[in-house]
Length: 339
Image 1 (tube, one colour):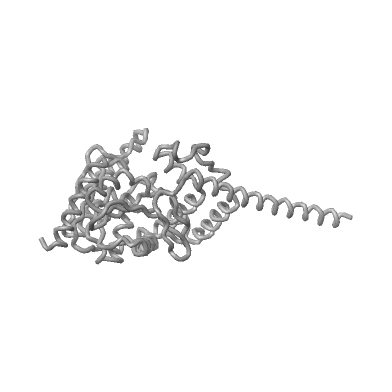
Image 2: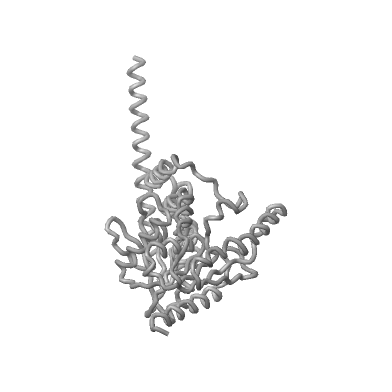
């Protein structure tokens, strides 16, 4: 009798688990459909064979400027700058795998994997090299890796407070995320991917402004809504947990072609609202300005650094970036014409 009751209880438990999983999967699919309806695509999808990546290009002429985003986020953040650059050359931003309107890509998402994705995307999208890269933060490091893999395809770079592998050893500990042990990286990614598939991430991280569609939202609200998508959470993790590998890939880049290179460096550290942390951050900022960023400059004999005094990481004014891009594009054009 006891065994019969135990079997019945286990069957009920199995039924409840199955019902919960099915409900979660349906919930996630409904959420995806709602996201597509309220966040219509900006850009166009390019078939990569096993998935699609999103790219948006404006303007004509060359060399095309390719925007590479920093950290976790869609390429849409470049839209205002793209519109200005498109007045004098073709300007393109894209969504990395899992971000914005792009599908997730295979694990791991190291800088090399990201650069190879971008190379294939540009080729399939018909955006012809050579390119001028504008890379911010981790996007600057990805741009450097691209330049080492495909040197003949790069005509110049503007690196905007670009990440650097020396951060691992030189930055204050509170600047850096806790490293995930190598053996746990893929299992953690699979767990997050599964959680997204069954709706757990959407349930725990509801989208901001979820009752609005994009016509009622500011650009910043659209970006926040895109970042709240479960696939974005998984994509961020796929790149974040292998960041040490990306740093090692960047470390192998000891020299780039001698193209025009401008390195924009933030002159101020963040305000952490804590006197001790602010002292540490200010001291590290001097190391960042005078020791680490100059290493990026030396990757090209034509590199130069511009320190932007009142800017912090992520707040370098658009007009400073725009003028730097214009300068590099003009230099690259002069070389192409033989002047």
